[in-house]
Length: 290
Image 1 (tube, rainbow, N blue to C red):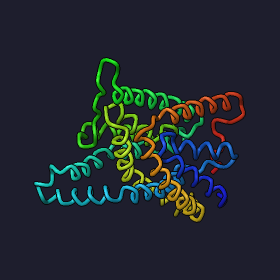
Image 2 (tube, rainbow, N blue to C red; image 1 turned 45 degrees about the vertical axis):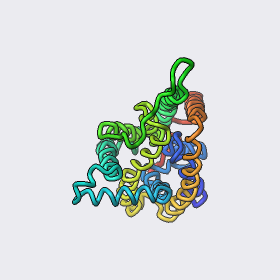
Image 3 (cartoon, rainbow, N blue to C red; image 1 turned 90 degrees about the horizontal axis):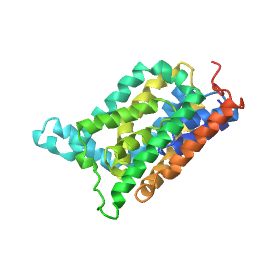
């Protein structure tokens, strides 16, 4: 991998990780359109450490408060009813599905799941799901001519059942094209949570999963499967761009609809299908030869 490739891929990772459009799909598509080798699941996992570092800094006050309360709850029974302590447990519970499924389907994630036809399908299908979830949320918030707006849930109403559902939604992002934030936010909206609550828990829930995945994949870099220099460079780029995107996205969702992302996902998926069907792109374009 060249330094220019790592710069572009790091930029793409930072721009797309927190938006509901799938960073893994965009890394794969960038390589395919540019005629580069597929950066691979290991490169993706390691550069995601950069974007998760941005999450750690952006949500540092929340994280410190949650971690502190969780540790105190281990020895102090009175702390176990504290919301922050409960959030610590819910992040752990919600991380179980992606941990189990990630290990179970590791070979598929790094192989068949990267087929461009599958990516096109997941872009379209999950785009439609996000659109439906967004419209339901908007309808609840706006109410109607003969009914008042429906109050949606906040994170203070999050329990183990919903935490696990969020976790299974996050696990769907193991398939490129699904989008971690897109799947978890869609799940949250369908369960009746506000946009802000769904997005905030989505970002917090991603921290253990992404950091664990990145550390696990570091062994591939040590074995020569990933170029250290360009990968670290891409990770730094992803961190800087990712932080700016988080700040923008959290402000955006407070008053805007997800429909621009829905339209983008569907159009990109359709375009990808057309290019593959027409023979312009091979379903395996950009895959590494070894």
